[in-house]
Image (cartoon, rainbow, N blue to C red; front, side):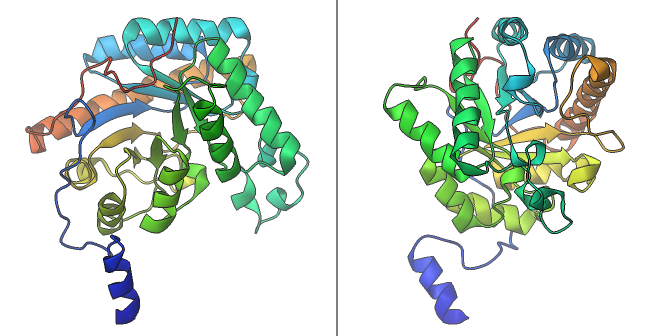
Length: 309
């Protein structure tokens, strides 16, 4: 094994987990170590509720993300989310639509095939999901979630060719599943803008990832039940220190999966979004108590995918 560890070191990768938990010297372009993300914001009413809760709790958030997909929102709804995000100076990141879990795949419905769920099966799904991005960008979006390496490559090529906005942030979903520094580095090279690490990575594993990559890491401090249900609030100061630049992401334990959302689940989606903001306020209070020197971005940072209203 030592031969392999030496080979990795020679190529700039950690040779194992970093159990000494070194402090990351990497930062967002504005010099900050962390930002706050509220996920599962399913539509303009939910986003409006999030922004009102942010005002009530007197906190700053930097990004909201959505899981149902661009295809589940009308043009008017997407434009409304873009207006709200632009006015608040926050990134609005919407998932692509068609995915294996909602298609005709039999494998994804089998116990051993669930990891296929967010992938794109065949070239038609790649085209459909990328058309979702093209449509969203035309309506003002500047941040999207993807979970397929093939689509990631395509979107990066389209950005370079001028077919998609050059400033489009490509956020990689936790469902991509890459769980080691080499795999995540490959996604960075393919054009990933930020990467959501698996929810169960330990602090030494996250430190090893940070040593290998420069892109921001999205880290669930509280994970939904179907992603493990971990509540890691007290780890947040340490994860910011070793993982910077990092998006501190507040999912919600003991909450239903509402994907794909719609009017039939809207009131539930709003309540869940409001509670995620309350959880964010709790975590931010903890960070201020136990890591008062940690640097957080201001709203409206220039590198964020703030929508065009």
